[in-house]
Length: 513
Image 1: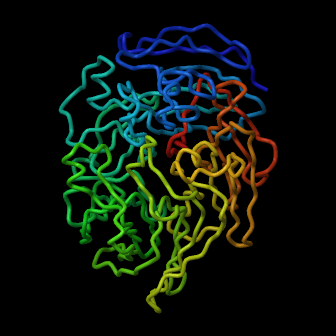
Image 2: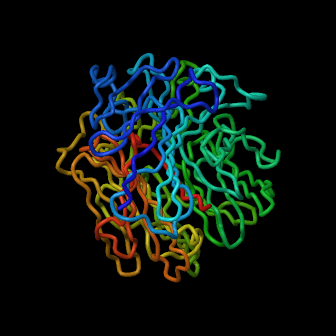
Image 3: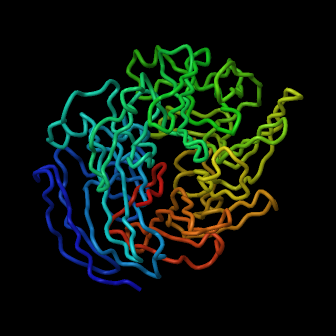
């Protein structure tokens, strides 16, 4: 066990750039930071597992309470306490981002998905957890709230990207869908500049890119409210946009994710469409579930051309696990929620669903011209991931997460089931055998997206580690949990104790050194 005293620092807007305020060492189960509020930020919740601030007291917004409660400080902690042992071949940063509102004047008017993006990261090297950092993405609005000067020209549709953070050709990119450019971060999570792929990206981008490691290509499907089409964007090995294919679609739909195979791009036309009247009236999320539109799946050749469309039963297509070609068929594994799905919410401060997400499979039979849908696992689960080296190619294993607090918050007010329905766990799926393993966590220990990291020299698809940020209700903070993927239900190899909470959020990546 590595258990040296931690050096914890808390950064606030009142400090000049690069200067930190030192805090006092460890108290109880781990390091504790001296916290100071950034300028303009109202404290939404205390550091414990349940929110205790204004939003929690008002009970107006579950996405500002409990496991979702925004943190109010940027922390830097060194030499973190580890229970167990960090594998010595892990050399890099484990990053995850999500909405973390910086100042909420009216909790009733806040929508979770629009919170300012904050990236959390742990640096692992040589069997040690060297540091933890959390930093807001410095859009022009965040810089203004923090009393900082935004360097350079403000890009169009500027936003503190809050949905994904990925490595790409030696860079770290924070991503958002529907318009904003990615923001490039440095190795210590400081915002550097907007990133437009060497001045070749024109228009919107996406949060859910697909990187084909074999072809060395980054793919995206981007949408925008005023477009009469969506765009398949291919970025080649030089880091430039090499091809953009416009795919006509009506009603400006929201396309949160897509799928990629060696031959095709799978475009999912969900009936969530832009509502111009709502936008004109000032709606935070002007997208509605449109019962008058069919749901379609488009299969587009990767090299460009026309998409072939198939109608399917309506669901909310949430996230792709992976996809691959199989003879004359395309296989897509993904998480879905029952229709209708309300992206704008129904007065609960975030998106609303009529049921919990599950893991599904589409078999798109190109010869017969039909799509067969099957349920892989009906337990509540989300944030599916796969060994990233197999993106667009056949996989055997996949990994998902379940966080009880998230499913309760997502359910509509009149559809909330008993809490006993939900658990906190990570799930490993074996698609070859049709089996699954479950790594369970205690009540209140909300688990975030699981990310697979291959072991150095690995030969097998699942020879590596699963990393996830998991709330520790006893400490009122978060642990980075590291599992052996081939001993998935066994005791964690390591629990890295962070000095604060990582609120439930979205997606992240392992960024190898």
